[in-house]
Image 1: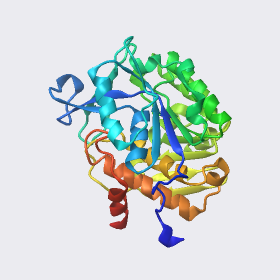
Image 2: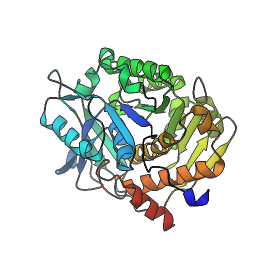
Image 3: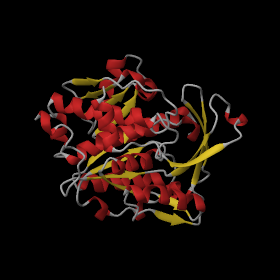
Length: 337
């Protein structure tokens, strides 16, 4: 088996598709670090939004991905499509509207690369994606549906998520959920938590960071909080701990993989690139929940190592999509360890 290490991601006919649903927006990232948002004078414009970052990560690594969202009929919407089309993301079902503009997010970077956000979406085009615009044909070939919590606000897109999940389940797709907490988008922290807990049991795979765990579960004890997440249809938790590595957790076991030590420039999209890399590898395989839960430990470690390396390379550059590595770059980092 060893010599077949990382023949994952080579693509081929059998590779399943990762379908991302949710926001696609423009991130304005400051040229200088350690400056409060109100004092930033120069921004770099980059395409982003967590679900879009995930779709881009999958395609950049050689996988198959598709994006379901709605963009404004504006230059920012055009720019988003121009960024992800060359990577191979299927945007054939991305809709355009004149009713609202493409969402914008202004980011400020602290010295350590961590972020502060200010969002402009009142409403934004993505929020207007509605349930009737989700087509079952997208899910017929199976694969993985991935979503986040940013789009679970009280807007038409929340029902679009329900419809996508319904079609995904009907067609035996795996369902992946990254809560990706962004409190500035919510009226109250409680509203955010409530929406996450409403959709949590519908997922099969939940990716969560150590920074979000207590907020979402309301439980201070780590083991207890992680156990709480294994509810409903959830069978796999991907627990990311920044520089402290990541864990693959099921009801039966925990598999750990250390992170790679790099100089972080910008943590935007690190979690998205990690889960994108993880889902890309899962999509290549048998793609049943049972086979994923029962993957040999060696294989799980291999997948986590590849995902950790993908995230490590992503934080070395500014922006999310532009910073995404190729499969060869990831393998080079792993081999140099």
